[in-house]
Amino acid sequence: MVDLKICVGSACHLKGSYDVIDAFKNCVRTRNVSGKVEIKAAFCLGHCTEAVSVMFMDKIFSVNKETADKFFDEVVMESLRS
Image 1 (cartoon, rainbow, N blue to C red):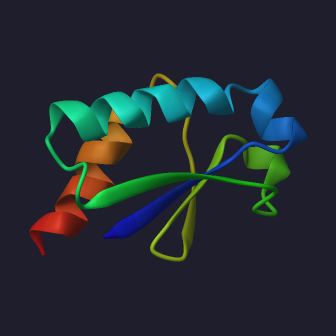
Image 2: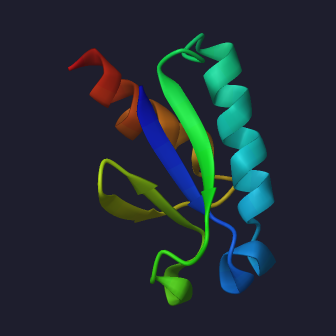
C-alpha cells in the first residue's frame, strides 16, 4: 500500500485541495487500486507557495484539479507498475 498525501493546510485549502482529494478518490475507484493506494490528508507539507501540495513516495508535487488525473496516471499508477 502506498500513501498519497494531500495538504489541507490554509494555502492548499484555498487553492482547492478538497477538489484534488475528490479527483484522486475518483482515480482510485476507476482504476481499481483501492487496495494499493491510500489517500490521506496532511497539514502543511512546507510548499505553500506551490499549493496544492501532494506528497508521494517522499517527493512533493504541485497538483490542481485539472492536473490530478494526469498526475495520478503518470506518477502513482506508474509506480504501481514498477
